[in-house]
Amino acid sequence: MKGRYSDEIIYQGIKNNSPEITGYIYEMYWIEVQNIISGKGGTKSEAKDAFQSVMLKLYLKIKNGEINISDFKSYFIRSCVNEFFYNRRNHNKKIELKESDNEIIEETDEVEEFKSIEIALKSFNLLREECKRILILRSQNLSYIEISKLLKLKGESSAKKRRERCLKYFFGIYSKMKKNDSE
Image (cartoon, rainbow, N blue to C red):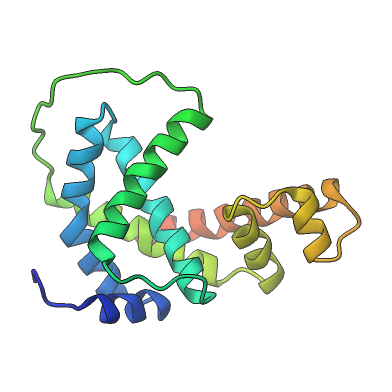
């Protein structure tokens, strides 16, 4: 599959929520992202979180026309590493230095992780437009005050409560879809 899709096709595939392109991105970049993050002291779980977060943020930015990527591979991998460090800083986690153990990743793990990304994107698409907007704006690091002004809400607490409800709704959909997928 290597070299099969150009950056423009990947960009359009993400924009159109193509499972084929999502699978391609996962197949082409997951191991590399995991190895880089592991080399920086991260765990497989942290690499997975960063990968999935970047996939979702990338989808949202492309869908809203906020980004146009000229070198997808470099951008994606750099974004995953940046997301990893951002998560570390924000969660006050200590970086534990460990020797790389060259863990062999089983195919079943890869399939499960790809399904998780796909389910997250599908779950997001099922949200009401208002929820999508709130989550997109918050993912762009806008404050609750800025969000409340943009969406003409009563105030900061209103924006925060709506985001919490939207996240609860998103995770409810995600959990149901994940459960249905595993049956």
